Image 1 (cartoon, rainbow, N blue to C red):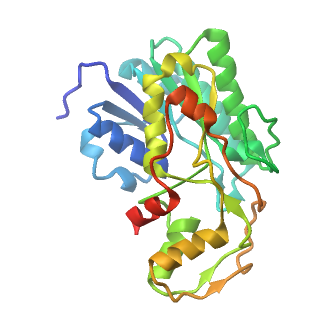
Image 2 (image 1 turned 90 degrees about the vertical axis):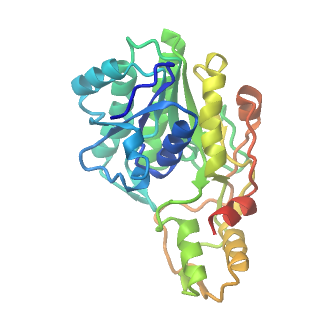
Length: 309
């Protein structure tokens, strides 16, 4: 039976079964935190199966406010990392009401469930999609024009977190993630899809070669979450971009992967029509992260790729 760590390093993670969440959970365990995770009954826990014996698993829906409040009251977390999300994958969205229930109502319920807990830091996870299409580097003070139901729901949750932090003087911060990549990501996503096909010399079907992303290696992303713990007091109510600060076209990404794998794959451009809008500018201004979190990416894009090849 797992013993509770009595040093008050108790962390609660939602979205622990996802790509970013699973990496965060494993890092917290390595850092000697006592980790509790909230999962749905239908959640696929395969990404954290190797550490399940080391965490406390609670079957709780964020939409069930009463059970959620009861669970949080028992856990008494010092640190809350909210990564649970719903609604968008490969440009395909779920129904708007379903998205709102998880991303907006779920966030509100979790924050309110923590009202009577003297937590030290609450990290909400935002998305660069909140900005909408821009023609310049994206800065936290930019006016947002979300272009999908998912993006709109994430922006709403972000603004609720800002409002609550400022009005109630709560240590809540939002990390606005750009495009994390790394080991154990879903094979349908761009980078793992290209790597897998390139290694097997299979055809690679893609959309526009000119579309760009700001890719950030997963270990750097997790570092940013942990940096929030150290800087909780000075980042309350803030929105902070977490990206590499560089943009890469899909053509550049594919070229890097095929070069590293010596692949003979045939690239079929514009053969996979992505339903999401394709932007020719998508880059994070990360000066705020450097200033408030003392955080900068340690890995270049190619260094990250080499680690997961």
